[in-house]
Image (cartoon, rainbow, N blue to C red; front, side, top):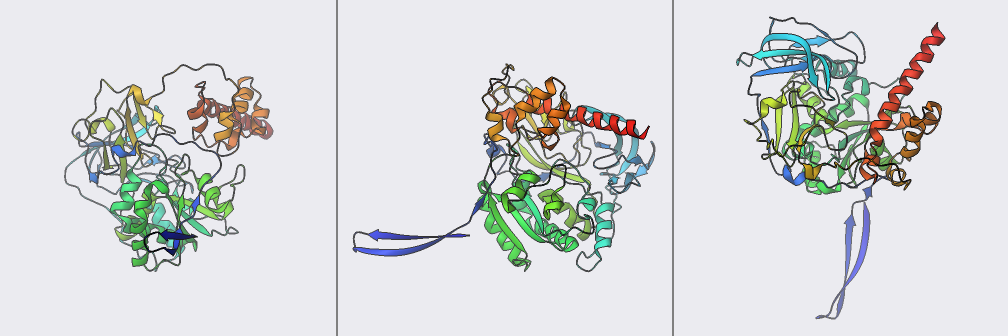
Length: 470
């Protein structure tokens, strides 16, 4: 915290007044962009719990980590909280029934990214029967038992990557984790679900953070963007209530994109860089999402697995923007028009996720998964439909890249299939934040081209490995 000193002159009394003002330091990183926030559409709308109109859910068999195998079959009766798919792999997370009812079918279904993957469809019976775990005191159990509870609850990161949390909280034995960073930045436009969660249920967030701190032996840092400064006193009050002000610090980060990226938060807060090809724990930090912290609290206090997802539904074509909680597997189209009203004529783009990192969807017939933070219905005024033209060599993409990469040079190397050069330029380090494409005056889809390039690099590496084994 910085302290500023001022002298204020009062002409009527011909006197000077000495004033001391405390100003919180704002942390940031080099690069990034500042898109229009559009959060006013849903920022002041309370979270409400809703159910799909069809009374059915379609749950992807795998939502983070290694591929799961269904543990149920068509015709089976299931209850809410029951495991319906699992894996024996360490980097995996079980999937649970989010409603009680009957397994209608197991088959391929459209999901985010316009892929078709194995899903389990459950037809609800309206009984709301549950099969939760027994509550477990997180501060009087071993770290091993705590990690098992998190794994059994199927908790994965809710920031988008859906990485199994029990793996993230259990780094190699020779690693010292100094800080658990709670990501309260929520830097993508439109999305307000984390803001509402922090405002409405701060006790769950702080509780979940404290549990993760207990497991790792780390201190806590809450990274709060300066456009959410009204949450500062709410969080401070909750921290004082839990008597943990010595262990949890709130740091204000500058409001820009992609401030919420793991690498950018660590760079902003501690001026440390995640090594190329490395993971955040190598800097002594672990980053967790606000919703993930709530899921951790629920898993211990209620014995409740991760079977619900809180998210924002918004956009210019959404006539009733909302922050909602739904059962995992709720089909988006089953929320229209009962929960949200959409102007179909004005909708030109449907996104699963935010406007910079989300997936453009071919229809609303896809399920809300553990990692779905937002669904957007956008108008033509909100979407850039200008055609791509040849790169003009302005270098703006280089200026805004938060990792200091040269996207235009990477894409040029990929265009001539010079995979080796693209690798040296850092293609695999790209976090696909979309800042480069956002700023590009030539409308070059840089992220999409880099994403394809990364896939080619991985195939080439796999081919070399296979060749070496042969």
